[in-house]
Length: 492
Ligand SMILES: Cc1cc2nc3c(=O)[nH]c(=O)nc-3n(C[C@H](O)[C@H](O)[C@H](O)COP(=O)(O)OP(=O)(O)OC[C@H]3O[C@@H](n4cnc5c(N)ncnc54)[C@H](O)[C@@H]3O)c2cc1C
Image (cartoon, rainbow, N blue to C red; front, side, top):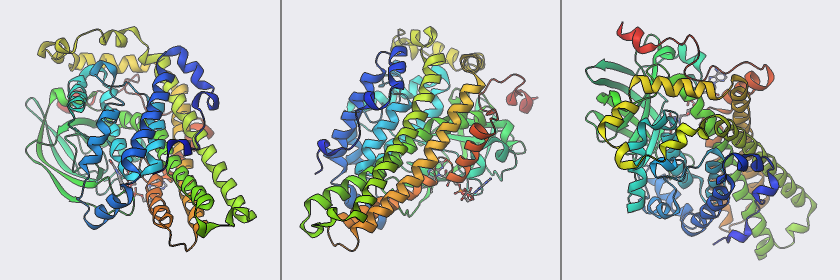
């Protein structure tokens, strides 16, 4: 087993001076970061590294294979409550915390790590709806403390719309076949969602669908679906090339009822909310990619130093050049995701999360928050309007646009680095029959997905162009002036 001392990651405070600025806004920010990095490293070393190849092989033979033991092992390390706000019993980790944890886990096994990443992605839409869903988030953290894993997933992709659901302009013209129909007390969801990570094992899924299929962008809405609901089913689990430990499933919704309380955010705000969620999750994907590249580099270096079969190779200049190139790429990919993550957190902490109103929620006991009258109040249209207006007023278009651009840059750069470094490591290891070959080959397969999910690298580079080159304002935040209230239009 690889000891934590073998890590080539630098000390965080030394390497990233912006952390000092964030520390002033939230005193626990850096302490949490260092603790989480250590916790993640220990979890990866104890539970992921040695099982990675075996689980990958099993899931390759049978895509429905899922290793609940590894997920359970993550519970004492706080892996499921990481991004849940402290007010709902979680660690209150922000983007940088998720990213640093992902890098550590992915040095060991990106597939297993992605189970926790997809879970955090499923939670993300709930976080931008204020306290409305603290009930479900509290269930996740309570279950974690009891030793029971309760996983989440996020479903936006459809059979005929992948890239198109990740951009508001494309969404307006997308071939969307899902539909959330208004029924008394809520919505009836119909349609198919494809390639959903954790989709076959999640208890709760945040699902987006249009309320009016003729106007998907204007009526795109997020719903919190209980996988135990009538009408919900898993049609199939995909045969994957990489990150096999995390299942990607096709989900069918056949008149699945979701009550008004389980609408996430405002009806019609789903497209903007999805953009925020993607911008928040791209730095952690950059970190996943950095972790994959670092995993390959560290394995290769150890093999070159320790395996008699590799004797003398480290003295060859072409090998030294390859290693230097890998170290360079990993360093720059980490800089990119840390830059994007801290920029996002700075925008959030500077305006939203440090607000006295939100902090005050932490003083309300959970038992009171669970009372139905209060729950109805925080999930009412008026409270959601207030949350959207609050989000809008707490930050500026300029800050968001820059943050979105950096997130896309970190994601696209990271994905390409993961592919290049794993490829170069395989080339250096050559035809050796040592175990390192199978490990590197797996990391190369795992790396490919980082160029695809959270928006393909092509889409992300278009975002980089728009945000950082052309300086276009991102049409992201719900609550913009003149926003059409989709629900009013639909019900009118
Ligand atoms: C293993 C796996 C796990 C996933 N997990 C999830 C999940 O948990 N939840 C979820 O909702 N989705 C998930 N996805 C879906 C993923 O986000 C989509 O696959 C991705 O957005 C690409 O969509 P697509 O596959 O339909 O490809 P397409 O959109 O058809 O793209 C095909 C190619 O065309 C390019 N392209 C498309 N449109 C443009 C454009 N306008 N300009 C330039 N190039 C373009 C793309 O970059 C790509 O190279 C997952 C996918 C995979 C493979």
